[in-house]
Length: 348
Image (cartoon, rainbow, N blue to C red; front, side, top):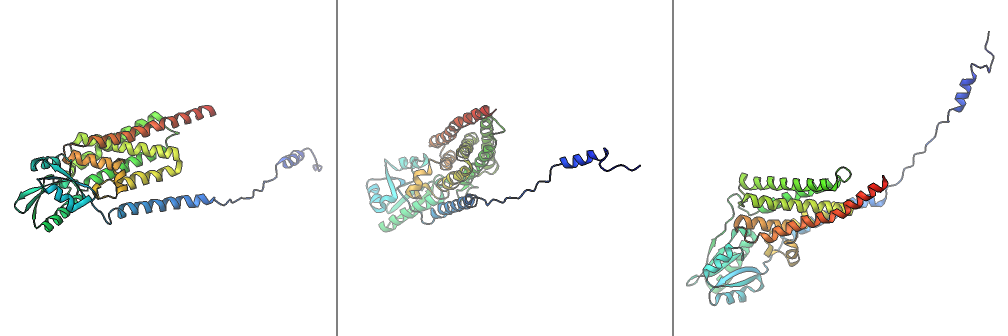
């Protein structure tokens, strides 16, 4: 028997077919990316390269001595040096040659000048102040001696370490630790959703201590390029890493995507270029000298040199500067962390 059309066997299929929704036809909409997405990365990169080249190349193209501290002993010699060399040096009268020598050893001045005998000048320099500064002092005193018809005998009373012949170990050490702190802080910026604020603080502090220890041990006992006592050097470098890490975290948190380029300009570019290691702080332009010791890399370079060659005579100030950068940045992060936590609680 044939099944009649429209029988009960076919009706379910017909109804199910009718109930099935018609296939949707989606039209792909291609939106043009905003102009900012194109411009911001390119402009940031251009600013970074312009600042880097301007700082590192521009500051070294024509270094000039400015008020280089020079201890001078003798009756008439201080006045004569001041009249001859002008603002290139800052003449500091010393009671005698021994007092001038002690000023060099204590890092109060970069060189000491005294009379060594008839027609002779005795110049004591500290090579630990850097080759650029030492060369500038020798050139200035040599020019005065030539005009006065005198000869100069020079002695380096604080020579550089054997494995730091160019005096750049402190700069590279500070640069490496600053870079490590920057990388640490930039990675911590993205951990807000994974770690609590106090856990991120422990991470930054603990990793900074480890960075300082590794860098100090390699540069000091292993390579012998930085002759500073290991424990104070570790503490100094740990503070430098913490200052860089917390500052990077702070700027990245508050400024968003532009925060890391700003940190790059502040610490890795301006900070390292004006640190006074590749070119002596007394040879920097006035604007660069003004910020040199206030930024973490400059403070660290000064502390490293003092600990390495001058028994830490003036290391306290730079160390306090590093600690302030780390502590202030950490304190400023606390309100931001609390605000995010309150927002997260409100949404849940």
